[in-house]
Image (cartoon, rainbow, N blue to C red; front, side):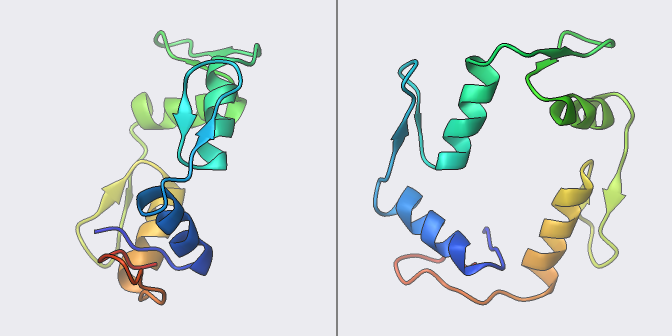
Length: 116
């Protein structure tokens, strides 16, 4: 069960799951289900700037991705929820979890059980 707090999330959910909206890559056969996923794909697969991890073989196209990788894989940073058993290695995921699971949902999808 996924839920989000913003109305735009319902719009994106409907496009991806019920309307089959797609965003093809103009450089390969990849087809994304959102503009953000297409942008992420292009950054990872087709743009030349690379940031390499000094502790493993991980390579990122953005410095913040390398930073997140190091925190998640090498520094064992943990962010526990103070309201349930949820634990994540990313603070942004903890924030989203709290908003989605503990602060209430506002916008249900009228075609399935999805709640935003």
